[in-house]
Structures are given as structure tokens and as C-alpha cells.
Length: 256
Image (cartoon, rainbow, N blue to C red):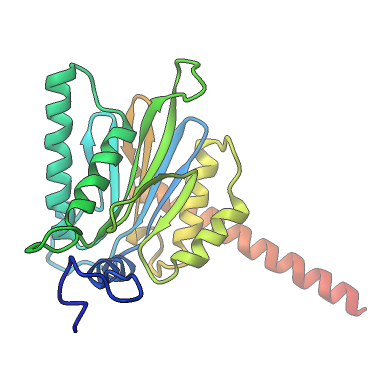
């Protein structure tokens, strides 16, 4: 029996092949990185090369869901458009009913629930995207303050909370290990932006030209200009050059 043809049929070893194929679609997508800092969340996305005559404003990997919620995705853009539309409608419905904006956890739970629903019915297929959802929620310690949060969802319909996470791209595992080594609690915004750019430089060839960096703050979000990202790239490259020279000097001194 071809277990990969039916979405609702498990293989004998417990796999849902269509869901795994959807996860493969995410791996073939562009890289997206989320980093939670002290007072913000940084979303850094690889922007694939565009056609010469294409308007870059029509290709966005970082989009608003609600005033309080920003989403970055990796995978099939058409699937993302449909899922984001559903999430925006739910956020508006929540505002109309509760007269308040939905929490980031609520939006993440809704997106994950919608993705899971598309793994359990015949006649549909899973959404081929994973998402990083950033914003501010009330502190879980009960202080009453709003703190930055970062959630991830995947095609299987699971959602989880992270301090830093990578989705999409063939190098996601190595980039995650890089973040594990370099991330620390209560990072300042500038340090978090630099870490995100540094991670993207592992997969991006053209520097700032193929990067999209968004900083989600309590008072709103800003998308960094290419010139500002280029300054961060140059700072990182100069530090790498200095460290190489220092190592060469140390090795030549040892030879003497």
C-alpha cells in the first residue's frame, strides 16, 4: 500500500508521510531566525534573489498578523498567505468579541490548531510552512509587565516557545547550534540584531542585500533599512578579519 498517498493513513512504523513531505518543503525554503532579547524580538530572514524586473515589496517573509503580533515564515509562500489570512481573521474576531488584542500564545495556538486540522482530514493536504511568531505578552511571573515572547509552529501542528530558533534552509541544525553557543539571557537589541545577521551570513552570499531584519518592540515594529544592515555586516566582517590577524600573529610569534 502507498502510505504516502493518503493524508489520514499511518504507515506501519507510525509515520504520516504527507506531513513529513510538508516539513521537507520547509527545509527547502529560505532561512528564518528569531531571537528574543531583553526588550524586543529580532526576526531575521533570508531573502532569495529576485528577478531583475520584480518589485521586492511584493515578496515579504515577515508580515503583521495583528498590531501586537508579527510573523516570519519559511516554506511555500502561497500556503503562508492562506494561513496568515486565517490568523488575521481570527485576531479581528477576538478583538470584536473580547475588546482586546489576542495574546501571542493565543495566535500561535490558533495557527498550530489550524495546521493540525489539515493533517487529520481527507481531501486536504498539510500547510507546507513553519512560522516564528513574535510579540509581547504579560509576564508569566505575574509582574503585570509585558515581556517579549517568541513562538514556533510547524506543519504537524505543534507550537512551542523559544528564546532563539531557526526554521527553514538546509543549515538549520548548524545555525541552531551556533545560536546555542552565542545566545544569552537579557541581550540588548543591538547585540541580538548582530547575532541574527551573523547567523544569516552563514547562508547568505550577497550580504545585506539578501537579508530582511525586523525588530519587534513594545511600541511597534521596525524593518531595518538595507544601509543599516550593511553597517552591521561590515562590523562583523571587520571583527572576523581582526581575529584572523591576531591568530596569524600569535602563530608566527610561536614559531619564533
